[in-house]
Image (cartoon, rainbow over all chains, first blue to last red; front, side):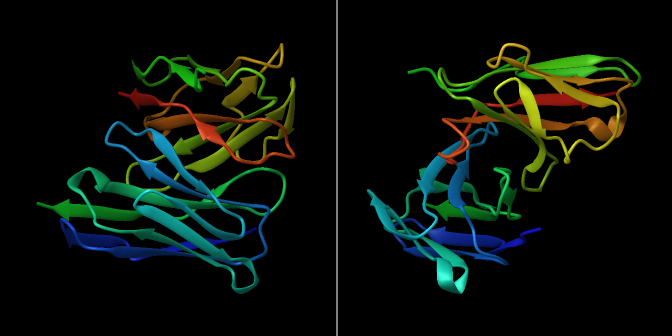
Length: 108
Length: 114
């Protein structure tokens, strides 16, 4: 089945800095989603982006399906951006395969 | 509208006991998924329902785990003879149909087996 790798595993930023999180996947996908997991464990949908580019406020994402990677950009980071960011891909059959996540810490 | 809801939010049980975890999907969503997340890892797929039937149960770890969705809406994940290794966050998600794959997750049930 599909494999999903995220980098970096950990990231520490000063408030106001920009960052890029990367997600590589091993095969073509029907679905690619980015999530932010809050401290209580809930997965918050950030982007549904099997291809192309989307923006939502300070966040944007790009998926280059032909090269099997996706990028999540966070600009002007805030302490509330801290948490774990997951990329998840669906190859077939609707089940999402998650990466191991990137732990982001934004310091004030 | 309301999102995916899960009950209970926390469950502590003794080794060997039986537990049921409930998921109420977004109204109108026909597809429902269960995932399990161990500490420090990403969620892992357990089972997927399209309507009332389990379309893919390949992620269930063994026959102690079972899930039902009798009326095509609410689902219950059942774990028999719980073991300490079953301790994890159990997450439920739903999507509109199998053709609209974006999945929306509930807040999860944190299961602790003592």
